[in-house]
Image: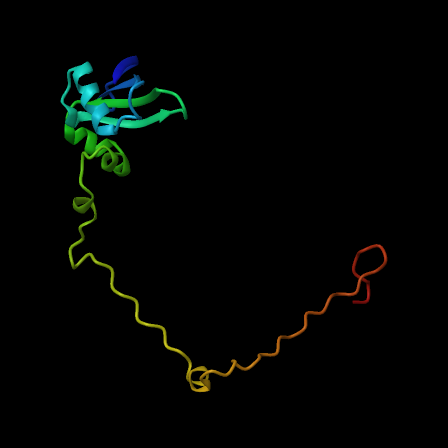
Length: 150
């Protein structure tokens, strides 16, 4: 796997440096995010924990992958700025830690719906038919508008 950086932009407002990269992987399949993060860490000389890969895209039948990544100043900056599902993909956070709810915060279970007794007593027979009122159409003239007397 050979990685090359196409673009590099510092973004001081979000406390990160943004990279666009290209990977050539002629002898293997598309590399995993974890492997790309490790290679990118070597290239930009930053710890792997601070690198977040936003997206990677490889076209079918080619051995080239394009991607976007960001290197944050601290891991805490990455956790506060980056969307949760991206952090999960990059294994910066664990799923169990994000969805753990205390019993006080857990939603209460909805009570079971009661079946009306008339339907419950009928058993296998079909429910009684309910008469639907017929909808009446207003009378219209030949030109399509309503009649004056109606």
